[in-house]
Length: 590
Ligand code: FES
Ligand code: MG
Image 1 (spheres, protein in one colour):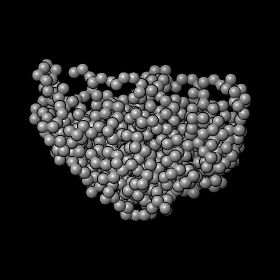
Image 2 (cartoon, protein in one colour):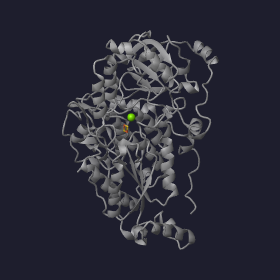
Image 3 (cartoon, protein in one colour):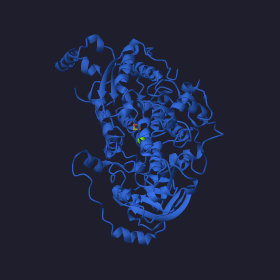
Image 4 (cartoon, protein in one colour):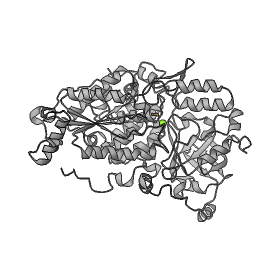
């Protein structure tokens, strides 16, 4: 059993239990508590439902528009089942769903909104502990950022990947095969009917993207930090062991409350180092960098781009899961032993003493883990990708990106690890799309496509546009990869020679704003550099004539985000949400 843990054992005897936070709402013999009790009774509860029982807030990011979480409507009942069985009082509190596919301009704009919502739900209501139900890309960091700031005992229940896609007996991978077959359709090698077959077969069950996209990356990271039950993040959403994992998590959170096992006890610098190591071995999404930096900083752990680059030089990619891997998907990864097996295999890069939600160490959690398929989870000496060439992720710096940018050298044509070519610069997505579809566009495979004004503030919200489409004519002529540069992000399911997260972004006047079509750009992955062949004097001249683009929003949430979102290399958190912004927020007056 992947998620087996000592749960519901009442690990702290009754006479040693501390008073519950929720008792401030339900306990006192005063008028306000009368109100709380009578309103609980209005919902059908009786005093024995709350007296001496931890109230467990279940932050459920289910919604009618999130296919990745569609099983959460039922799964939350399994979580409640576990909580009740262990003597807790479950309270489901829906939180904003952040559905990656449907939300515009990008879920990234709203990650911090979920973080704020999670934190404030836990603060404002009588919660003693929390079960966090998420999985679709930004929901994981959003929930964890909020739970970290509130610091009540919390356990993460990942949605789990969907089943492998299927079309005409061929396996399809989320995202990755959309891009692939879209290029084939544009090149005329598949028909419109084929394309519709792909459309119907690529997502055929509940669950998150089953490639090593941002969802699989971030849930694995949550588990590697120690915030999920062992093995939880690899279980397919529709597998019965996912139900058992949800029930176990419900049982376990009750004891975590009695043990006062909070995120602050779990989220140490070593726990984040473990998370980065696991992310590298999995061939993670580039989005991991932004989210882990934000999460670590909330936990008071200083992590930056260089920590990722260092880890990627050291730790080989051993998960053969697309898009970095060549063949398999998350379902195969689960059958091969899942994340505990991967962690066992890279255990010499991990701090095995780190405490986890089980109340036990990482080492104890993975002790029994085994790899069942060496082609899916490779031995360390037969990795998918490793070494100085770049590992999973590479951080580049230079006069085009003084604060860094990110590339995934493992999933691009190796000839782009060292490349020089003239820039072809676009200021906005629609103009770029139109130009690249124009068969008469003057462009060669050596050109470097550049999109700017797509960063955290300029995007706004840093949309996943970084896998810039290839020029239609070149695709027809057989071209399948080009060097591309932007201050955007890209989907974890994307691939290609895409340089992302250029910081500072062009919208705030980063050097990317000064680049012109025809300037020669050079990328050197082994040397970790990116530069434009433009002199400092010339850049100064160009800066003098640069005018900032107009504000994206004049009011509302977008305006607030525009005032407070940090740059990509700092994790895109809001400045006022960062832990060191001001004194701790007091408990509410009841
Ligand atoms: Fe939800 Fe990919 S769209 S995880
Ligand atoms: Mg994604």
